[in-house]
Image (cartoon, rainbow, N blue to C red):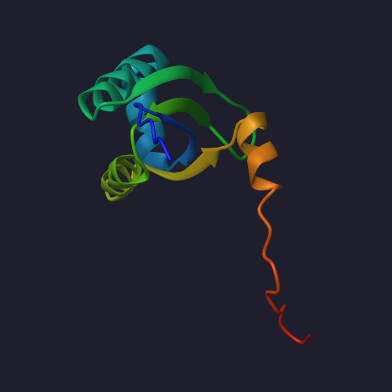
Length: 115
């Protein structure tokens, strides 16, 4: 069996809501400064920022990012969360092609709870 390894980046959505302290900083710096800082930190960790949006409602912002691994993006989110300036969420994003492969997974004779 021939195994070909290639650099595969996983896609993530990072979204969140600002605390009152975070909103004060946003009002002081503006939206472009926050996007630029997100780009800087993501790239410094080996990722890329695909998109950055501001939102209305329960979510204030969202960013679509590519990262080489789950460890790095989760570490970034944990360190940023420690600031207390906003509450963020990391969501792994799944392509249509990945979902097509996922639905083919066969559990064989796995017994479900209660069966």
